[in-house]
Figure (spheres, rainbow, N blue to C red):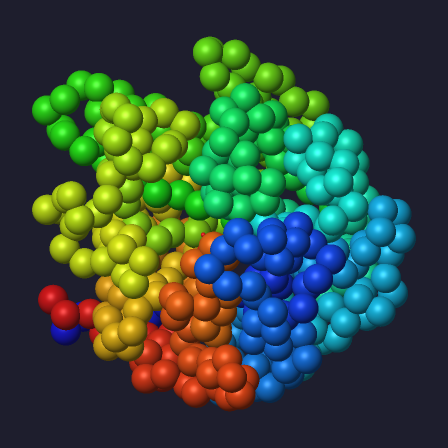
Length: 429
Ligand code: FCB
């Protein structure tokens, strides 16, 4: 056995998002989409976390967590264009203070897939005005929470957001439109830049530090057939576009858009103070018309691949070495990395423990090699509403009985807690 000691101050915790846990987010586009019957089941009360957050944070604290990532629901904070709700802002201030009181570092996401209805009516992320709207919202939240929050994530998984909502169409507005997807990409990048500066302005005016980033969703793309150049080209192109173009834009100030075009963006350079990375597994791509649509090529089912030895409850690949790969992509940008999500949905809690420990082992080795990793946030604290897949996938360290809202701490949560509490991980040689 090799024992690894994590650095002092390493952030240990979990991530959630407002719409997936809070319940009754009736004023956003996902809610409307659900009511229109476009998903397995509606989010409804979800985990009722909007009211039960204190008890949920008690559990997280008992599990040794010293950090927690959550998102602020834009449609609660700005229910109508330009009208901000003091009550909602006070709620999130309360959330932050309850975390601080329990010794947990708050990590705040500003956009996690959902949009207020008024924004959606104006064309959502296809309308250039979204950039100003988002920056104004970011400023208001920073003013309300600023003194207490150091870590900010402007946008969760910009590439997944684009894919889910504008390419694959499983989320609102349900588009399948390549051209729109690039327009949305540009607006997301511009919105991050504007929000980055807004948050820093507020922090500067109070002489306080702020660390701002995005939560990237990074994944290794493997060609379905190594021997087929078409598949290798498709995988290579996607890997660059999906994992790197946005980071390049936010560090170098130039966004590469298709057909070799480059967009120079004002004030974009160095707008990442650290890099948030969400990691779940590998994806296999092929050229052709069979499989799930991507920007270029199609995505294979994991059942079609012998390389895949383990899957989660949604058939996603499980591949712990990939976490080292995605963290290594951040290295050239010379920013520390925070693992902002990594998790598994499964009915087998033993598999969850194995998943966490195997990924942590890889993170531990990265730290040993001197790679700056700030922390690890498991997705998720609670079972929750998994978008188009509804409540069936169980990602939580804590099980939720949706009929009674009762919580039950899983064994995997206790295994993870040992690492969080002791800062130690014993690795088999
Ligand atoms: C991530 C999302 C998160 C959750 C997990 C399972 O891509 O950020 O909201 O759905 O996947």
